[in-house]
Amino acid sequence: MAAVDVVEIEGHIIDSLTLAKVMDVILAAGADYRVVDVAIGRTNADVSRARIEITAADEDTLDALLAELKVHGANRTDSGDAQLADVERDGVLPPGFYSTTNLPTSVRIEGRWVDVENPEMDCAVVLRADGRARTYPMHRVRIGDRVVVGQDGVRVAPFERPRGASPFEFMTSEVSSEKPKALLVQDVAARITRAKAEGGKVLAVCGPAVIHTGAGPAVARLVGGGWVDVLFAGNGFAAHDIESNVMGTSLGVSLQGGLAADGGHANHLRVINEVRRYGSIEAAVDAGYVDGGVMFECVKRGVPFVLGGSVRDDGPLPDVYTNVVEAADAMRYLVTGVTVAIMLASTLHAIASGNLLPAGVETYCVDINPAVVTKLADRGSHQALGIVTDVGLFIAELADVLC
Image 1 (cartoon, rainbow, N blue to C red):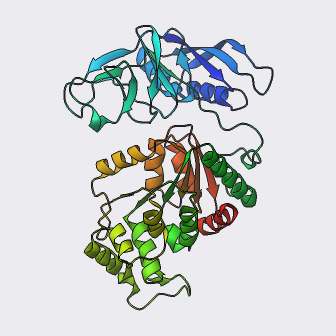
Image 2: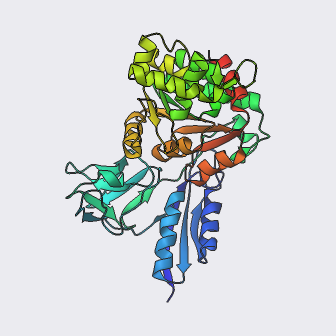
Image 3: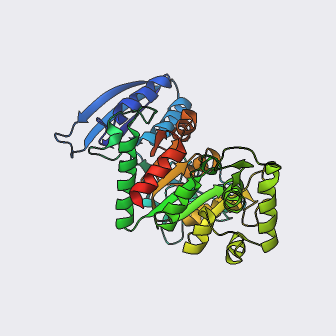
């Protein structure tokens, strides 16, 4: 028997193509829709509203579709209070728990809408004893926590890209290798400058290719100039950053001459070993063993960093989190206040960081490989804008503009 429900969507849903995306999702699910009513704003600043009746083959199909539509800010019109269930085992959520997006979310509790704090995707919503609602990753829930289950009483606001003229409107695709890079650099620099002026923080997420391409000194300039407030990376980035400054190579290849050094394949191992001898990157900097580079500037300026480990790490450096859950929690602690994020030639760390960031954080993913920037958006980071270019050239220009 067919199942029917009505959803409502509000915002700049026409020019952002959100309404069209909602209709596409409905049809792709094998369901049908009827626009009950629509009110289109008269000016660029006015919001639009639409109510859509959805008909699906059965209740299960409809429920799954309604959950998918929440990502686009389409919410049921007759939603009652949110349903709650108690956690019965530490680190295990109740069946049917509501899985969050990184969009602004609110839940209805006893007839009152409560904003969910710290929007983060792939989490649960926990109602605290003081009446506040907050996202919790699965491993953090404890026995007795009250968790939102099902789709009822959950409202999500649609994501809207920054409005007004910008180089990103030269081409409307999220990812393109043909966007004007000089204008993009100027635009990113302007947004970073504005974020800092408004008291926001800038997050840099770096992959090892940043060092391999010779972009390390430019990133160090940004950190040293106060343009980076938080750094996320892996063991490889930090190890090769230190290698490049101690030995002049990255993965054994000279950054000056571009030729492989004799025995250079072991250079990163030797610097990791020496830093382990000192006990930490900070201790190696204080001792004078590391006297330049990104990690040096982080230590000297007190810029916090999280180095998340992986199974392929050499060493690793003593500062690396070898427990990935602890690494993610350390990252969660530091993303508070971040308003601009720059993902530089990183896939796994970029996706991990994007998963933690609310949709309101302006995110720029810079990589020579279009698949990397596309993957970040496909994973649900709606706010990510892809810049397909050589990271070394891009960051050098950005550092010139800002520094």
